[in-house]
Image 1: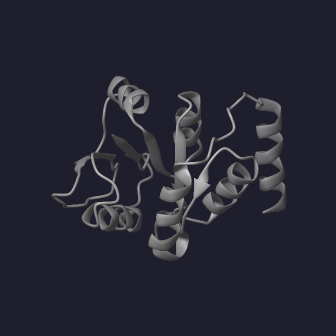
Image 2: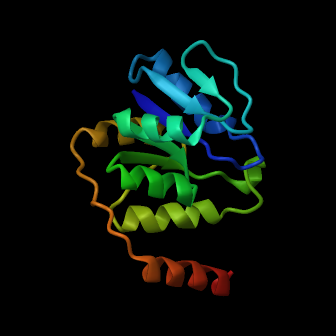
Length: 158
């Protein structure tokens, strides 16, 4: 099972679901379960829930083969906690998916550190799916002080 989580951001993120649906139609992925939050999306290609309980969320995280997510820090950290391979796509302000583009910076740091793979479109997503077979993501070790510094530096510089 592939678990997709779009978090609780109060803006829609249909762009990521269109990419996923395209790959399901092609038969590249299957058995997809989506926690969509505020994103309203109709499809018969996968199951979509607005929200799930914390217990169900944890259950899906534990049981899934890998996670596809927006670049929400909470979603990424939770998947890392369960040692999951992660594919992340940033919400972008130009599509009104977020107020700014900070998720690009979040992804950049997690990719640089070897924790996740990222994509911005269907072509990059297909490459990530191929890379999933051979990558071994870095195991997450809590580094609270480094994260606080990272966020602090980001705020100071923006």
